[in-house]
Image 1: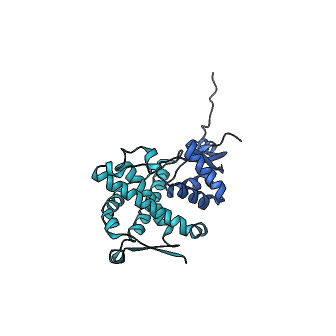
Image 2: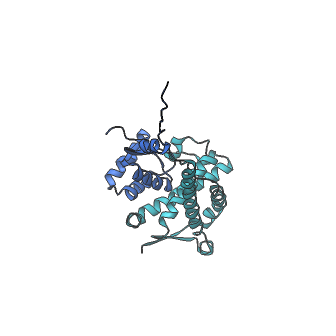
Image 3: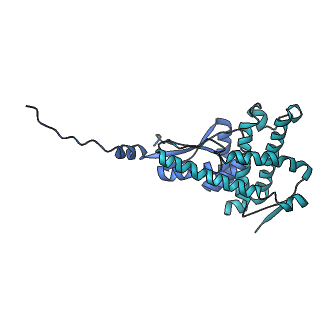
Length: 153
Length: 99
């Protein structure tokens, strides 16, 4: 099993965990992206969304589990074949919700091209943006090092 | 004297089945959040695309706003849409009227 250990800067990442946890709580109530399928009756549509939401919640739970006592002692988090997919999806879900809830004032082009001057944002948006970038960095790390495991899994 | 006629109304189910028959396209729509590398990985994972094909579809989504990533029977198309939605991509189904 391939395993990637990453030491994160505690003073940088720990303050972001509040907003991450708040966003995960928010995601318990609904899907990160409005998903649906045409031509489904109400019952099947409800089951469809429920199953997606269950999966989203499970992914977020596994993601938050990275930030355990070991993380607060050493700053270390570990990704492997077992958690990589869940962490990737959880990061996507949280980023989508951050974009919708906290970063609405930023144009798509700026977010896509990393052309945001964080220094010009108010404190709340600045924290959300740092979180948004941090989660993207985790995704890039996993894709770079564990893509084979994910594709074969 | 008019003759009584008995007409059997078609069951709604049959209409639905007719509408769902045929070929369907799985279409992925652009979003400004998911990383290009993430979308490529998801396409490779879900459809078994090679890197070049996955990247071509990703660029189509990015530049044109949408890409048809699969076409076929409804049941399998639904399964693909569900899986893409699990990965938080915006995926929809539409009838494939090209064939």
